[in-house]
Picture 1 (cartoon, rainbow, N blue to C red):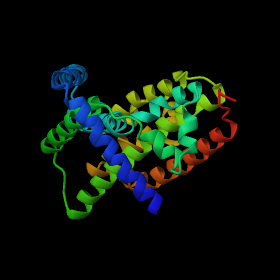
Picture 2 (picture 1 turned 90 degrees about the vertical axis):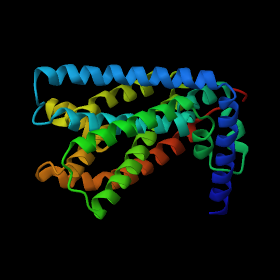
Picture 3 (picture 1 turned 90 degrees about the horizontal axis):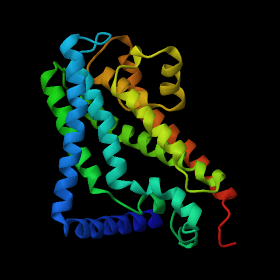
Picture 4 (picture 1 turned 120 degrees about the vertical axis):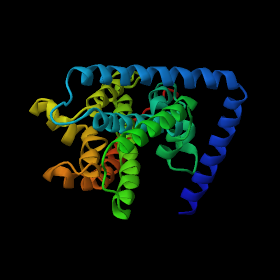
Length: 266
């Protein structure tokens, strides 16, 4: 536990230092934030165009879809802002820089996660939070203390699932012996399905999004529960369980990857 606390302390110091460096170029940050804003506005405009022609997609209205869109986008922001290092794992493996993390008396995976932050992710978190808040204000949600607590737990669990999926996908670089992240980007692309109701897709895609790449537990099932949508809403309560499972699977994949890791310097 002492080692974990030490790592968390070091990670916070690293994040603060990187933030200070990035904020030294405030114009770059503002440009990045503006780019993120307009990118998401284009996505929302696409949703608006769809719902301007049809009022519902498989029983879901525009604000319900925007809420799911925000959930997916929030978790993407968490990766970019706090755990950008997942995308750099392939580079560390290919260059041999992973060696320095292996030699340190700190958890290797945690070190990789904390190697970089990206202020673009902060913009995504901010914008997606506004999207979800606006969507929820436009919907009739029966809030109570338990549901509010579950919503926070859903956000945390969904973020964990997203980070684990990204790290697991980038672990393929251990076996490829290169910095090629094509497979990780393919897995990332599946997040687009999570922005829309699961039921509009074919059975095969639904199976993948539930059991293989569980993006359904990042947006669809939590949305079912929060919005009280039908008998399957209770499945949303499994989201924290899925988060724990993805942590375990990711841990195993990362450990197996380390076993086959062969430093280029050897």
